[in-house]
Length: 183
Image (cartoon, rainbow, N blue to C red; front, side, top):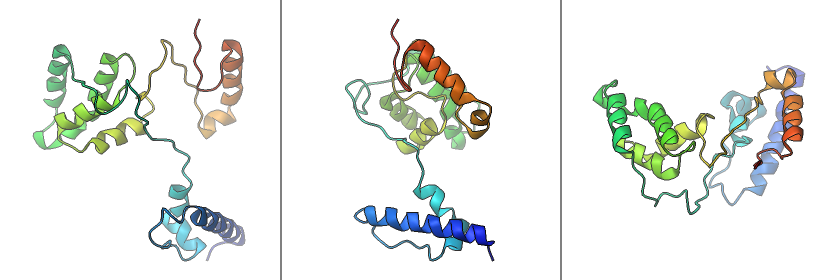
């Protein structure tokens, strides 16, 4: 049995989930399999339902799957060298170094067409490469400037004052969060 505070928190979250579910009823094909707050906590339902991640792509003229993209001849040799480190049935293990190589080749960011090319090389569905590229913050999926500043935003960093550091940088550079500064 859950302690009273945990039961209260679970009831509140379940209330949020039901409110959210009523707003997105058109998207849901079946009712939630969660029957109680304890079941919701046990399955991790809320963490998936209320994720704030914005891992999506919007096609643009310079970043869409129909763009022609391939590794240069020199980089293709590097790709072959990367793949030589893995058994043939584990070629997908080379996705991260290939994404890094593609990002270097493309001026600091990885277009969707490059991710599709990597998927063809390793023989996986493109979504498997997208998953890796969206999971790791070191891969930029949109154009970035010459200098790309990142400030840690995790809970431990925020406790140590990362928001103050970020505010000072934004003020000094005269930009907004996720903004562009042109000198």
